[in-house]
Length: 135
Image 1: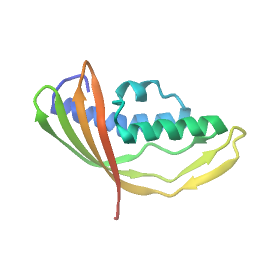
Image 2: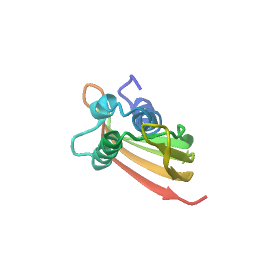
Image 3: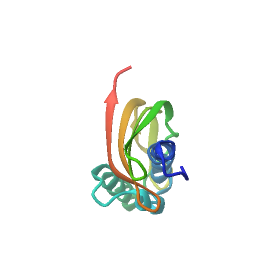
Image 4: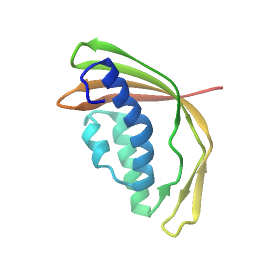
């Protein structure tokens, strides 16, 4: 993730879309998510809104980190623009209120995540598209 190349972009996409995604919902800590999100990224802003809404009601998502089934990237403009596609299996999760009472559940789902990524003194997600897939 520390290199400004296709491999670094793919690592950044996996970190953002898998590890950091689970972290922000489990903790409500959006600092790193915001740092890696372009202001125009609709998916990124939607996650911020969802996490803030959960924080306002005292809820946390107690899910597990998704399992990566496949991942590949490509270069758009060497040194600045990349894409990545990651297929993940998102385990089932529960939503709990501040007292630990389960207020909701999410079923396991498989997703294909598409990322438009830029290097701007670090990685920034320009756009993310998550599509539920069968199988």
